[in-house]
Image 1 (cartoon, helix red, strand yellow):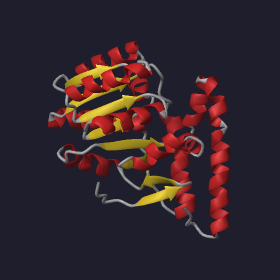
Image 2: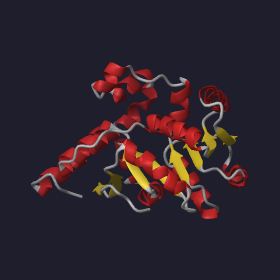
Image 3: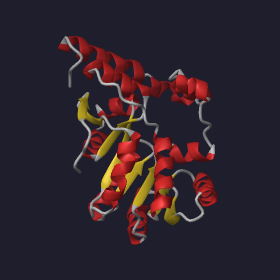
Length: 252
């Protein structure tokens, strides 16, 4: 796709200096393009996983839009390039896209989350946007052997917008499988976005968000995240080494 914004490189991965308004402005033309476009949220943990996982790395590199979903990415862009870019939480972008889909009568499909969370997601969409065209929905607890059938039913529904809510790597793998056999104009991977939207995973208080401490809230509420949080200091060290090796706020 042709971008009106700049793209940088962060530890070998692309990241777009894109604002929320620019993404939303681009969507209607992408829907009419006849090609698939994957929107991917980037955070430090995903960056560090991609250093070891080839398939995840390729999924990030092939995405049409890679937007900063965490304070750590925004900080790294400032340290390496002197760029100040707004963090765009994936859950908030998902809500913006649903609102846009309702306005423009786009066909929407959902894949991911537990069956009970997906049911609550469908109910809340019906409540907030009664006219939204929800043409397909499938939970994320299908076996790999069932993936082809899930994709076939999805493509038969001809969605304009597909929201995929699975964990990192699995959701990117699913998107690549979809793109190999058909076209969905706009595909957005939202991780735990369905859970956050229906309140299955509480959102941090506004004051913590203002202090950029969402990661600490998640850690306290979900201690099982502790091992993966070890990626954060390793990410910071990698970024700072690049910064000081370059001698100026420009590095790749």
